[in-house]
Figure 1: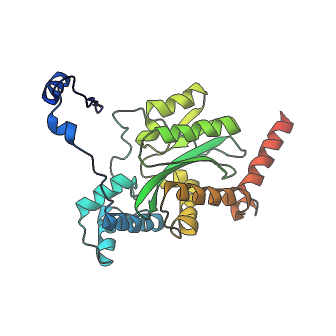
Figure 2: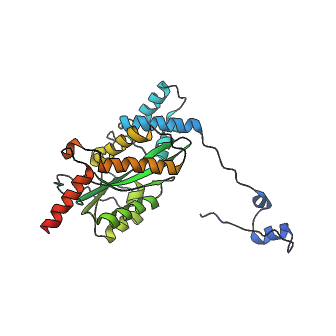
Figure 3: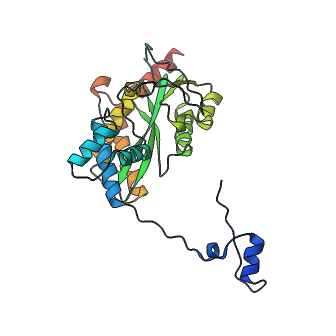
Amino acid sequence: MAERKTTIQDDQSLPIIKKCTLMDVSRSTLYYTPVEQEPDLEELEIKKEMDKLHIKHSYMGSRSLRDQLVSKGYKINRKRVQRLMNEMNIHSTAPKPNTSRPGKQHTIYPYLLKNLNIDRANQVWATDITYIPMARGFLYLVAIMDWYSRKVLSWRLSNSMDTTFCIEALNEAIVKYGTPDIFNTDQGSQFTSDEFTGVLKSKEIKISMDGKGRWVDNVFIERLWRSLKYEEVYLNAYDTTKEAREGIGEWIRFYNHERTHQSLERKTPEQVYLNSRSIKELAA
């Protein structure tokens, strides 16, 4: 239920009690001033450590993460670890029983990339969300990547795990680069939502979704997160969203335009993407 906002004018037209009665609000609500809650610095530190462990050992579940944290001196139980994993949107990549069951609320689409020869830009795009620790808080980062060239086509930061910032990144990528044949995601609620899949369907883009726990299906973005965090995020305790946006933006620019990749024959993602697009346009 959405929060109702009520305004009562401070004048002498009616007694305050009468105004509250007519508006059906309590007097205590009228005099209440919300207090901004300070972030739990200990919990932020634990989340940062969990993020590092997950990036390095993505197979670890709540038990293993708890054991690692306890060995580092943190007083924490498995239930709290599970809650923090949920808040951070991190999951063990180890195989689990019954992981092929589709979600009840949204349609789960089949995985379309098995045995597919991906040989050009804009053939397949992929996306994922990761946790970004800050000095006194945290953000979520979504990125959209061209699978063939590894180029980051668009990205967005958000302080909540909603669908809006994912759709904004998707729309930006489409406006700048056109549409892919296939768009691959995991089964996260942001990507299985009717709002997100609706954009893909409206552009006649085929939807592909990873099997749960199959981190290898999105391995290129997982590698992107690891490089970004060790080369930029963990080295800078961002104080503000602006600082995070500037730092991450500069690193992604470097990644796209200057960082060469062995798997791309020592070329940059930008070079591979533009070269592939040029070949396709000449052949058309």
